[in-house]
Image (cartoon, rainbow, N blue to C red; front, side):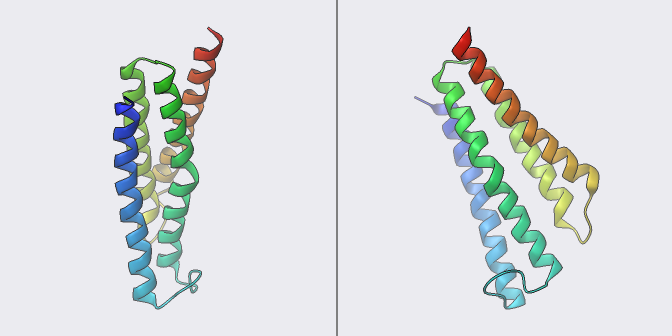
Length: 128
């Protein structure tokens, strides 16, 4: 059973649903069917959703592969929880009228850290 990566896949699946609905509601509010209609708020919602879609799937695949290689559960949870925090912080950095640069940078940095550490963990499992 791949219970740990399944848990994080479910959490991030729900998060993606929330982000998708927020974009749909923004499109309805600003009457924009395609693109961002030059609306800064809608542009932010679209980018939050897009950034999530760009990074989280790879992170989840890496978590799954790590789990399949038999890595310690505490390591998987450490990466998974760090990714949850990273994505929340990233949204905080972008959701307001202006960027909260430290939050945005922190969320991005933590996301990249999770991806990098997971990739290195897989290589370690393969070559040790």
